Length: 225
Image (cartoon, rainbow, N blue to C red):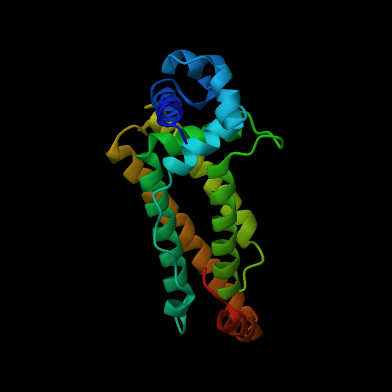
């Protein structure tokens, strides 16, 4: 690749990152990026095939995901429901704690929420959906919960919205979500919810001991989360 082209492509990729950080994902557009980079917009089509190709190049070069180590199902062999629920809760809280501090990730996800399109995929949203689905399926199997996906959908959606509000330094129900103190209150509430889920799961096991066998079978057959 000619040196001049490499420099031009990098300027365009850098312009994407600057716009996301300064103005938000929704402000990205061919004309806006070209103006920010000081480059003719024709080169975006020539070098990247269009806006989606440029965004994909930016994402690959600057992946916004702060990757947590995957939960290993082997560590939960013989664990109680309370232990599994606590581990799931703390994993989710850490994930959103990192997300809350990651402006670029928040902008990718906010864009997907406000302007989701089947024609133009959002690489971060797609990646998170796939990884989260795999984790939820495995953890739900360990406690024989048929509501794992639906409960997780509610929890993740709520926490994602609260993370957006945190980024905007909003207040909700008197809680300042833009501060660490306010977010700590949200985390404590999430822990109480998971505690309630553990109580409900334990109650189900008490009423139907056969669930223990089903859970053990699923846990043995689980692969990597």
